[in-house]
Image (spheres, rainbow, N blue to C red):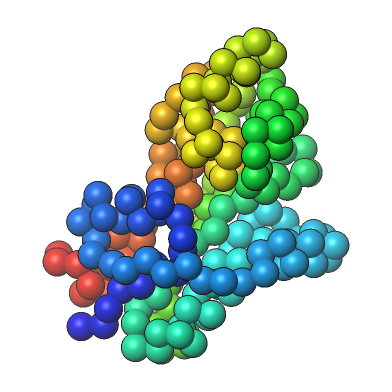
Length: 198
């Protein structure tokens, strides 16, 4: 049986898989995400195309390191009114992102691919739509205080599974897609492929 490797440094993605009973090893796949995103944006790519391409690049990079493994790779893009949002790095950037998204509807695109022996054997892209409420600046500062540094490295500056739920009036789409991976279709594929027990 081939070893399953998640080509990601994302704690959320690893936890999703582990909580669902998928035994895998997580290894960050080091690619120049910012460089690829800038190039794709300049070429007029959609957020969906960017998420899929980045997932593919991560999978290929990991395959070169672990050629005997079945590689799972994923990526997520946040797009609002044609603007792509990346992970903020500190409190100021998180505040700025949340202010930009406040009172608006945005989309989260999550893509996942599976590679084996250098070839893509499965892929899925899913989109969730989230509407953020028009919160006050005072509430925003309270949220930043309470949520802690963990959200500084989450695209959009929130975790829907935690305090971030208070940011929204409506979420349309799959919960796992919001968390960063179309988990149920992935599990279905792994079961059909004999990696998980049917």
